[in-house]
Image (cartoon, rainbow, N blue to C red):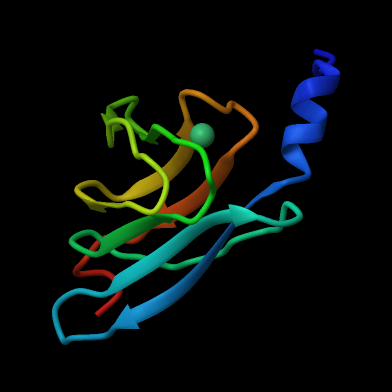
Length: 118
Ligand SMILES: [Cu+2]
């Protein structure tokens, strides 16, 4: 499937970057920033119960959604510039994060079972 040239250009200005904010005993909180930069790989190792905060540093709105391995979709709703949305990971397995508005935005992660990784 060939991408429209406009999407190719879009791909060059988005990236996701992250930081681990806190590391309490029971759950971690990860921060993922959407900003204008080159597309780059993001790797985090969250567990069930961990939180991901998505910070929109771009100057346009996004609407991120998570697709869990079992097909369940969780939508974070419209996210204007300079706002943050957060989600608590509820299921173990492979998760794909994408944006309804910008299909080029994509982040994949594997959520470990809570008990298995302690
Ligand atoms: Cu978007």
